[in-house]
Image 1 (tube, helix red, strand yellow):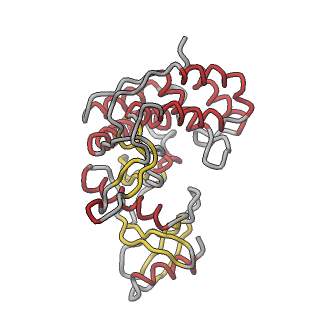
Image 2 (spheres, helix red, strand yellow; image 1 turned 90 degrees about the vertical axis):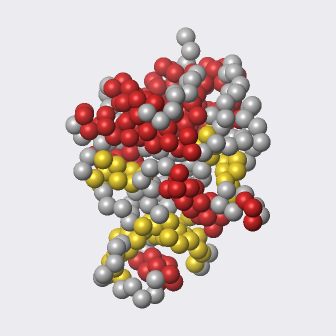
Image 3 (cartoon, helix red, strand yellow; image 1 turned 60 degrees about the horizontal axis):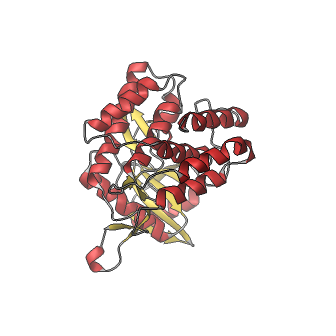
Length: 313
């Protein structure tokens, strides 16, 4: 995000504040900038595709702050400017956890993994839905601020969502594709209440200060899903993503979750969907685990090995 746009957006809501600096944020795919003032705390400006997407995310952030202890920066304003939808949020200090997690002492990594597990447990306790899929704000005055799932059934959602994730995998995954589809076809129906699916809950969307998580960021395009899928995906992104021996982090992550609620039953299909969904980003590119991040060939091998280990038998 360029300096003039960020200054213009903030000026609409805070016309009497003197901007002394604008710092573009390089991480993430949405234009983002930190705006600093002479005598006030900084603010964060972030643009999104549509104003409804911005307001849905803001509604979720508000609810997360009200119902849980997850450290989420407050959204203080939303709007549109020259066709660009935006949100203004409070600034939280901290270091990008993506760049520090792998090199942190093992005790710190386990502590942070427990925090992530507890956060997911709190989110699952606080948010239940009648169906699966993308969340939207309920219409009408009675539904103000309430989020509802796009689908009124969860009977086939996991398999359909998983098949789309498998279809997005590039040709390098072809040797596994039939077995992945067979695993999904054999999946039993989840007779559980769908819960919030924070599909990008990971160190790369968190800040850390003094060895603890100071902010969890990026709540765009919220979804509802079987809780075992959300647990499998967050566990993969927190435990498997950064270290060669992930088992201690898996144990810590699950211990954090169990401090809040009982673990859901994870089936092979949940793991397959979680890994396939993580292996390719929204633009179709293979994601790069670790820090420093792996090259493409090594990333493909990483995801392929994880998928093979998730398959039954």
